[in-house]
Length: 591
Ligand code: SAT
Ligand code: MN
Image (cartoon, rainbow, N blue to C red; front, side, top):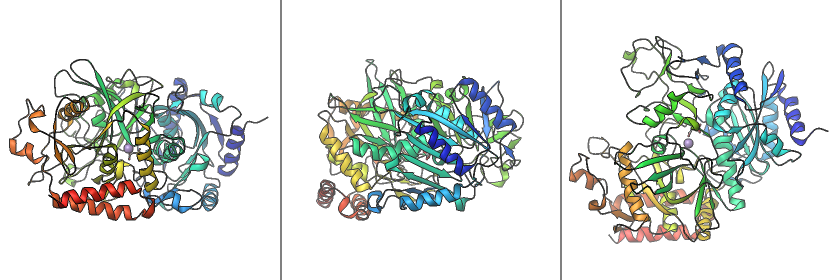
């Protein structure tokens, strides 16, 4: 008798009509074979899926070039199909689930013809965590199969765990014909199903990542009493040897990966990385908030990564283990067969091939690597991976940071006065946009908790859920807002960032441990400059003070923009949050 899983695979194969069906086991040998297939057999518009890179300098690394129209998430073609539109909320595109299924069934008719359908069994989360989920993704491209093996715990264990159950997370993925008009990423939260066609890009194709671990998991968390967040998880070891765990939410391509792997500029401090993108947070029996990273890999932005900006990531990329490392849409050094991107160490090589496969002309003014070019690499290669990474319980969180890319208005660091005010700080978040999503660069976009593109239900209900989580904790983490990106009159960043961000973390830990006082302002507590460890930094007093300027008129504008944003969600915005906003406005007006 076929199991529900086998019957489901069969049903999807009848629609998509692959030539072959291949059940993956996640083994090392299989990964090698899949890479081989990607080098020798499978193609994307005539180009092989993988190209072997210089194995001496980039061991076990492979290069992948995507379809040129397929380089980022496509938010306007991403839908969350709850039975009713209100549940999806103004933050999501919505389609009736029945209509969406019909549309996808039609678009998928024969879409895997001539291709192999890979059946990928994987876990999100450590198998022994009560929050771990057994998942199956179907895909018709080896790039996705190999990527998923890096990013998730892929093995036959998931098949055994699913057994005869109907209750497993389902993903259907096909690159289709890459037609952007026929590209859709459809989520069916009540069925724990994601159906994606037309794109091979990370967030659209690695369905365990944003699609399941954020959009669908956020909805599961709402029902089950936990939260799925777009956050890094890290441990900060201080000179006494004590490690404090924090999470930080930053929109895509705001330096989240650099932050997660930060190398401290202050002696005696060390960062232990647990995750660079997604955190699942639950309230423990001790009344604290606990975090796990459901993933096992980094899917990071390559440009800007160097020994200067992120030495730990460079070491991770160069380590080479039995997990392949993938480079997607970077440039290629034609002489050395190494990947190259803007911002990597060294000079621009003379003989460069750009991400589109053409000889690169530096005089063209164009970038050689796509700004959203990526690496996909196993966390096991990270030299500062936390020893708690594989702890199924996760780590207890002492502080939550909300950040964004703001040239003005938002101070370097602000501590909220309560959980509720912290939720407002998170809800007020905005960021000047970058290239990870397919829209213009440099535009301010409201992005509460960095979850706007990833919250799988009405954002008003999401804020209520955050407030509920706060009420469940007896020892909640403190909430902070951070902004590394404030600029001076010339548009230059004031704060050095990177390894010096540890100085901000030090203050945050001091606040958590009640070691220092702070300055009370309408938006929260700000550091007394004398409490910041700025030793060795060559910054003028004036510039340091500029990092902490809070202008009432600018903040009133922020509050008004938040009101407009909240207005989109009508009565779904919790009263407590509107009250908090009203009280902030009153305080600002009183200044
Ligand atoms: O959506 S991805 O996870 O592929 C990249 C990002 O935007 O964070
Ligand atoms: Mn992300």
